[in-house]
Length: 210
Image 1 (cartoon, rainbow, N blue to C red):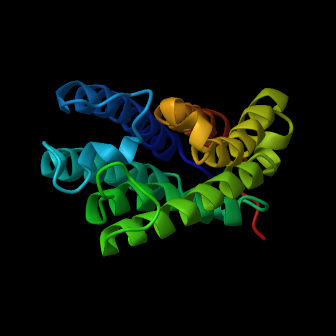
Image 2 (image 1 turned 180 degrees about the vertical axis):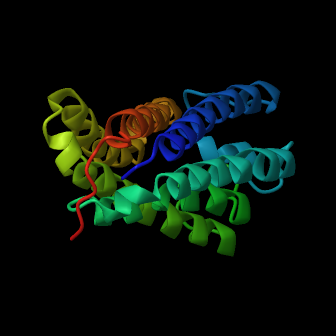
């Protein structure tokens, strides 16, 4: 069983992750000289050699990733629910992505290719976007979500949106709004995290093993 304490802790961590991420994005964009939330990728907040890069990497992306990881640890009971095991583990790609941005910052402008950290950043970005999309789609099919049509649609739509927006962000003609598109993707992830914490982590849900 998912106990009341475990469910409450996971829900609190879910909200903390979302709120911290929102505040970090807003404050980071406000203090970053010349930064545009519409045109710049989120990871450009700590682009190598740019102002405030170290602070925003180690004080923003790293704790955001650790908060997300803490939520997943608290929500670990999901891994024991038949049909949600793979989705749960794939969702770990998201805290890995945030921590990875701190460890492997992109070059200024986040071009495709460049320095060693930019190449690592590119590989990490592609891998975690597709893994995140698969995680949300798989979790939408979990037994204790299948009866909740609204939650199921939100998770499935978020997973699909992740892929669509990933390719949209790479289109040269959409460069002026690529930052906005990425923020829409992150907003869909935030909504999904809240949905998972509220709809899947019910302490009265039966524990079903594979």
